[in-house]
Length: 401
Image (cartoon, rainbow, N blue to C red; front, top):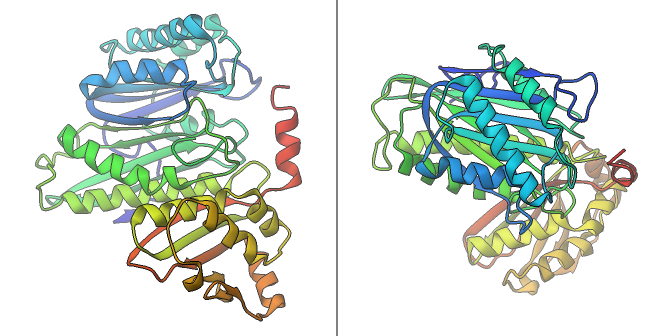
């Protein structure tokens, strides 16, 4: 597998994109985008577990129930969530307008919105934006698309990788947004993955959903699960490889490449948490079950006390142990070893004398690694988060203004 320089969602064959400044909420920046496949694509998606599931997600679920899609339309600034029947009508209208502008089937559209909850979309601006952007699609438009879906994000999150399947070059591209309201089980996180691989839908679903559990669902910024989270994938078959099934010899290679790109995008989201100064990676090893490892790793990176200690460069290992203890994971506390970077701070559930200066220097790095060894089995899991800073409070104190 090779990471492409300047890769984007339009790196795979047959995909184009564009973005426009529709002024849905923001002035002077692109806030509406379309990603388009020249042929209908196999499609799959996962959605937020928040009971207040936003209207665009509900429309997308209906649209791609047949496992097919040909376009993605996204706006930023207003989430179209908490708007009842009006919100559903607006999401459906947005989807239909995109389909009409592109000349494709009405149920071949993935529609998404992100931004402030409880505000109506200015539909006249949405319509004008869709009409304009649909005429501007181009092969290098993926970069514009990735920037257009940003809200409080500080960096553009996109990439692409290539690998060979049946001696054919296959490309996978991705873009994502997410900075706040990020918590495991799909949180405000939007992710869109494109690929030109030729694959049956059942195999695409299997590879996609398995990898989401180990990537996007293992991220937490602030413990809030959004109404609008969604990750979707389109596979248009333009690479020309022999169709992949779960039994194909090259299926594991595709699944692994998809896993790598999902994890990389999840890390980009975690590292760009609102107000964050550090990416935090927590790995739990030696668990009796994979679920025990997942529960503990997610609890540790989601803990406000752990996050603030990391911000303050404080090697307070007790907070790590505490989070593991309430996570729901089953383990023997008397067997647990804890490391911050390569500094061991606890052994057999008890604190050690350790080099505080070295631990502090470790915590000052842009990426902080926490390792928790349960010594209770063979399973492990990794989760990603960030520190919790004063800037997070400042950003979210007046988000609507």
